[in-house]
Amino acid sequence: MALFIKSIENLINEFKKLPGIGPKSAKRIVYYLLKQQSRDIERFAQSMIEMSEKIRFCSICFSISEEEICNICSDLNRDQRKICIVQEVSDVAIMENTGEYKGLYHVLGNLLSPIDNIGPEEIRVPALLERIKKSDIDEIIFALNPTVEGESTSTYLKKIFKPLEIKITRLASGLPVGGVIEYADEITLGRALNDRKEF
Amino acid sequence: MPSFKAKAVVLKTHNLGEADKILRLYSQEKGLIDAVAKGARKLKSKFGGRLELFNFIDCELSKGKSLDILTQAELVRNFKNISSDFNKFLFCQLISEIILKTHPSESESSQKTASLLFKLIYVSFSEMNSAPSGDLSLLEKTAAFFIAKYLKITGYNPLIDSCCRCGAKIGVENNPAFSINSENSLAFSITLGGILCRSCSAGLDNHPEVKKSITKEEFKLISLIFTIDLKNYRNLNVQAQDIDNVLKIIGNYARFHTECNIDITLYLDKLQA
Image 1 (tube, helix red, strand yellow):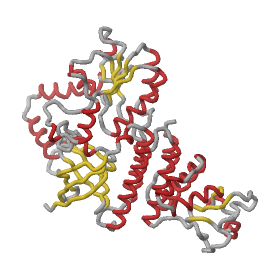
Image 2 (cartoon, chains in turn green, purple; image 1 turned 90 degrees about the horizontal axis):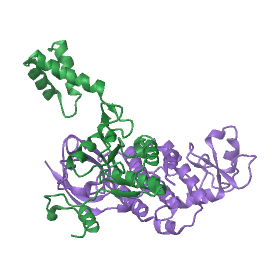
Image 3 (cartoon, helix red, strand yellow; image 1 turned 180 degrees about the horizontal axis):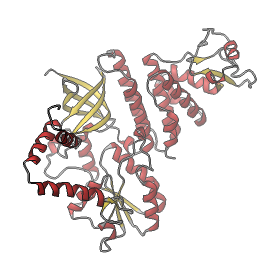
């Protein structure tokens, strides 16, 4: 790296920090940027600054937003009686893309893992409980990963919400669309069979 | 690349890159194996749900440079009740962490130890899985069994039938914990590694930090846990308070003598009532 000019070296080091980008890709990106016009680069830098200045967490659902309260929470046309619990901010966009859900969200930010010291406070359980108690919710939907961590977080939350006597559901799990039964594993197929629906 | 087959249990997984997973496996043949499962996080991955935490699998791996590569996996046993109960999940995570933090990598562990530990993990998970939901003391009982047998297999078990300081066999079972204390308590030393005899216990009165007072029932339970097999252990009737205390003692003992820096009381605090 000693051969590089300081400003280029700095930029390469910054790009290297990004996920999925190694030293080689970082160099390639920097050389590409060198060839670009300065106004394009300015726009690129500006949009990054804008993002870090404007984006914050919604005070209700902890999703990302430019305002104090995000678009989804402030939209009164949405079904205010349903709340969908997801792990990450990115999961909100994924659920929205389905176009099937018109309720509200709550982002946990993580899954329970006692070994890594992630307890109920770290996944914003007290805030969620408070929110549900205050509002008029009639269904809580768990949309967490069907992994052991996701399942145990779901069951933990289920136990906490039980006294509230609200309908609790979770995403169905089974065969993916376009999958082949021959390659399905026993657990997935077993779940698909148990959760089968009248046709 | 040479390939090999193994029977293994998934103790921990990490995400790697876009869709891969790093698996920390404990195998019957080679002990700890770290492997990459390519594309395992994709919805249509050939591994499907087989590589979930605490699953027992039959797998084929090919030797890699630092990490092996998982090429095939068949499910042997899946404990579905573990994921549906937070407390069971917590104890299974504890078991995994003890193995991961203390166990040497494949080249250093002998096949016999690996095979014994593998069986121990299997029976412990299986007991956890079949325990009725909400029975905390049964889960604690199983965790204590695991830690005790783990210490025994790895050679760290405490001295119970003779004094750990002077080796005397007499006076162990009725040593007073502290010279002024009642007759119902015994002196156990975590740092010295076992039970103390009457004179050693009295001699250590100036160092109360090295000895701990345990009741006769707790002592009886500790000595039983290290000696009896699972079948008899299962039928053993124990008081909830006793097993709670014994688990803490054995847990702290394991923390002091092995390199796993796990404070068991932190775990017990997190249990969901």
